[in-house]
Amino acid sequence: LALGASLALGVRGRERPFLLRWAPDALFAGTAIYLGVSLFTGSFLLTSPLQFVLGLPAVSLAAAALVALMLRPRLANILAHFKPLRWLGRISYGFYVLHILLEPLFDTLGAHITHSTSGTAYQTARFVVAFPITLAAAWLSYEFLEVPFLQRKRHFPMPNPVPPA
Image: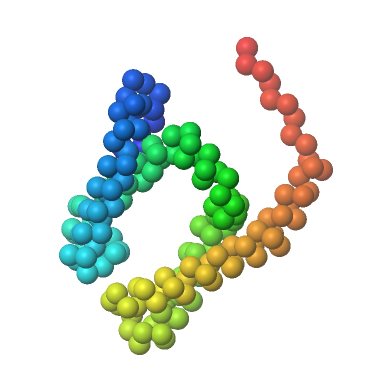
């Protein structure tokens, strides 16, 4: 939260050039620290005390750096026109909601594939299974639930907001 708030304040003030200059380095540092801690602890999950103390702040640093990088007009323009990212953005809410609902399925499939319920092989199997299933479920949810509702909103026009006094 502190990184996000600092970033929001910085992009509007004199600190913007500083933020844009150091964003690639912050992204690299955050990613490197998280990967290093993950390899040291033997898990990419934020379950160990070391992951909470170093890994989680490193992920936060990398995320804030990504937001700052998106402030660069050229990069933002390139990514905004990248069709796979636009499609993923369109179905992202369904992805966010459905991945939690499908967790028991992923646990069962991961355990069945690896004959274990812990470790790197289990977590990798869960990810390899979970990502495409969640992607497919989010796409189906978008096409068959969200789109029909979105098409009906033309029947419920929003009134014009009251102009500020």
